[in-house]
Length: 394
Ligand code: SOE
Image 1 (tube, helix red, strand yellow):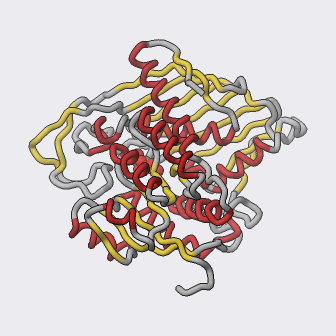
Image 2: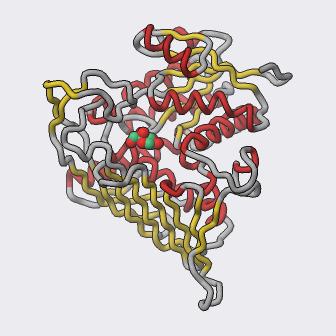
Image 3: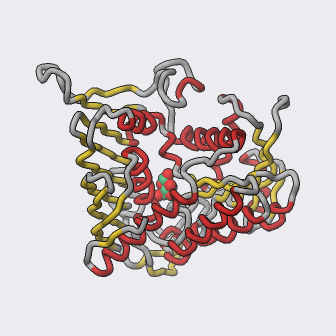
């Protein structure tokens, strides 16, 4: 596609599940949204040259490489998009920022608070040189979630009292589901807590505009050992036939915690990969003095809204179909009423990143936002170990 707009060369590191989702976003963003610059899918990097080349051909990248470091000093690369497991986020992001590149990094930002602090410091010093850094909490960009934030921000539900958040999956409920990097603490940092709990921490803080300042949590690993898959091309989501080798699971299968928000709200959180029958249920309900909002990703085009000011005879939760051109992001897509899916959040993420870069602004969530989520994760883990309430440093 040729346009008069400037271009932004993209290098993507990693090409499994998240790499495919990000590729779809880079391919579609400028075709549906009016962007200040045209993303060019220049190069994809992976550890294995043949697999990276196959991914480049399948996902639409011009080139591939088996050495991510080589992309950092290329003049035709402006943005480094990190889609690798958490154990390499810090090294790649810090090197890319030092090379003057913008960075988009998958969530959670890092595997530890110390790494997240180093990444945030690198992002803050690169900001003055014009480089921008963003962490990929993509569900912020689901239109119903964006609408929820807008309604809360406009004061439509008043003073927030309760935040109820669950992220429920079941892909390892079967004890014979194979071991993958997502079950290895050295690679993933933590289990359900960091992988999916991080999303609901970010989402609730984003929707309420208030940070979590104390937690009391409990982690559990139900299945302590699993068969190793012969090969895994699923992005760590359990693909591939199991062999006879077995490995210890070193992360949590499930996490739950109580939280106190700075604004005074009480929070109840649950993140699990053992909620049989729940596939990707991100359920958030916020109750305020003047009303409530409720969202479930398994019905992602709907936001439930309750207005406590309505006459009681007809008051009740209404299901708002968030499919109208007036709703956040929706107008760029299909005619009214047709709805969006999982992948659109990733496209909106790219749109917001490129727009912020074009405007010279800080894209959100920033690395500092990612660090704050990391501190909550860390506090929950410590709370579980010590069986005590933990405060979350600001
Ligand atoms: C696996 O639990 C996973 O792919 C997460 O890593 C993603 O962030 C989420 O979008 C879907 O589930």
